[in-house]
Length: 133
Image (cartoon, rainbow, N blue to C red):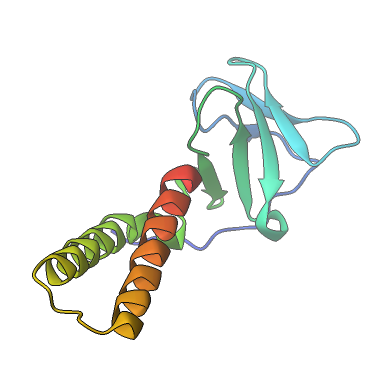
């Protein structure tokens, strides 16, 4: 399947709604946003005009689309595709460090401090990833 290159979104043009095929996105005056006449959702133009993002107060994950000239395609973030492998690597690192500390691999206080720093950094990174999603 061939992907088409994203086109810049023109703020003066009506587009079909990416959520409802029968709805139309119309520009909202004096903003860089569109509103759907069918589902009443609001979409904001992001990333230098190539992506629209749905504004939603009750949905924690931001949905975004790119205009290809005749239809919308879902826009994915780079971290979103690598989220699961990154999470698994961090979890395995934490488990490895905990086992190494538990089995007495670190006798020197300097090594224990470094291990505690690495462990806390991994935990903070996990918390950041969880809050970011």
